[in-house]
Length: 90
Image (cartoon, rainbow, N blue to C red):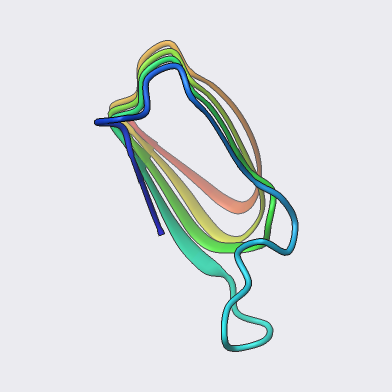
């Protein structure tokens, strides 16, 4: 699942628990969040991996993530994360 910011400026994006259901029980979904500006993003369902890149002035809440959450090239953002591993670059 991808969340791209060409149209996400000042938006609120919510994925409540149970909404990212996979066809295969027990498996989470990988999420990519890119190029968002002044957004509120809440991923509250189980995920395998989350990547957040090139976001500005966003609030991002992720949890639970059974794998890694990657943050790349984000400016002025606030993150709240429940994950096995957090990786940060730039």
